[in-house]
Amino acid sequence: MPPIAFDWTKMKKVQKIHRFLYAVGFGPLIGKIILLLTTTGRKSGLPRITPLQYEVIDGGYYLGSARGTKSDWFRNILADNHVEVRVKARHFHGTAETVTDPARVADFLAYRLERHPLMIGLMMKMYNLPMRPSREQLLELSQSTTLVIIHP
Image (tube, rainbow, N blue to C red; front, side, top):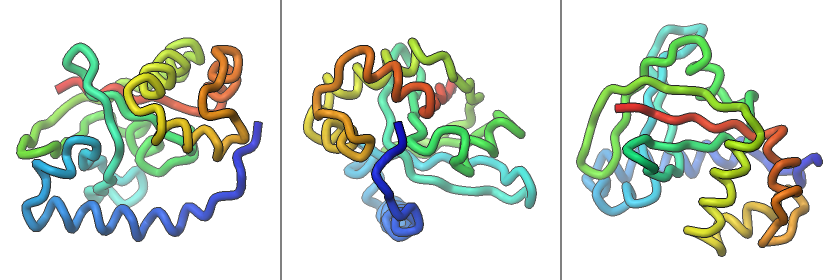
């Protein structure tokens, strides 16, 4: 199911704001839903910082990639799974585990929907889904979505 056309270049501006907020000391506030993930650029070898929404489950930091395997941060992790994370006032190194199993990704999406029904429900609209999609719809969406678990 193709998503509604979304201009991902506009997301760069939002990410810049998130990085700025962390830089000026608002990490403890914004860090309730956004962490900063630093990967190593697969081509450049340079650090790449990406603000991402996350969930902590059993000590792991779960990150979903709405762009699936096309997101730069996901492709960087495939090349080098050693990452740095800044969340709230905490900074740590970790290892990234990529998950593409549709059932596990669907479980994560269902968990996020339960915790943040309005925010994630509105994101579902981007994929022409209802705000409360069925398990079958989540499994179908999971075919184009990826999940990364950061282990500190």
